[in-house]
Image (cartoon, rainbow, N blue to C red; front, side, top):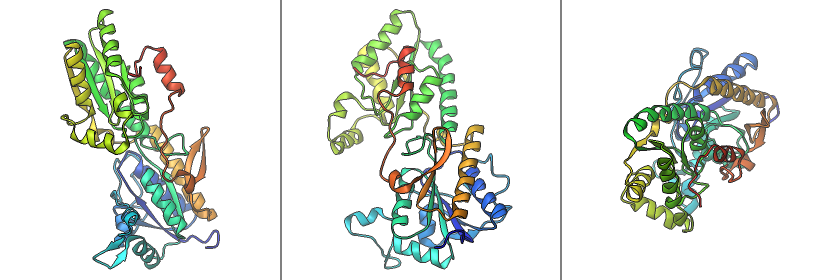
Length: 367
């Protein structure tokens, strides 16, 4: 495709929803249509909509007034078009075709010159595979986990931190009233950025993240030390992917099996039970769950999503594809999708914020 020839492009949101998706859609669409004269085609329900050809033109009315709206006007799904191909079974019985083939047929049928995808690790990995296959693709990073490789920040993250930190704030008063350990479980299966930021912002006494496997002896020693100092309560912030030191030594499949068969609904409940058994202290659990994904995006995320969106429109105008918009050193830039694919940005053990938390007395449960 020649540069500067994008007249009509598709846009989709894939994976879990998060605050800021609509702000990003607005940023892409307003810049592309008003500034560059492009036609915007909204694809419903992520890659599933692209496989099924479920799409419609978006007018100015569609992407006006959505800056503060949570969720996504396009809908989303966790469809991974290439995943079934891993075992050689790519076929879709309804069409007798594999999913990537149907995507390319629908791109041609819809007359799309390019595709803009908004999503997390899986979404941008799929975007890379489509780009390798010849599709003109641009990615935007969204996730409340902030774990996308190559960008310092993803939109949705700051909004989730705000929600989680406010929730921790609210736990302080009830914890102090009852002399309890309050365990709050946050999202973050592979990376602990959300628990780290929210835990520091909310004054968490203990923060457990996947990158720093915990010893329950270290956790309970910290709690007992606080009690000895006359502190009536403790706040324990747990990422959903936190693991014990024993679990960390297991092969990944065995660790997953044990987690699935443990007699607790989630890791937060296990940590609470371990605390009660070791200390006799009353522990209560709050699992914040999907509240972290919902609601109005924070002002910061509105700005970030808008900046990412307009940068994507500029990439469309320049004909620069196979790239993801990113923030590096505080500036909006781009990175090749090939560098992003199949990688997760985790919290380094020596990250400055980990050091900051330790200096104010926060325990990470590591020996």
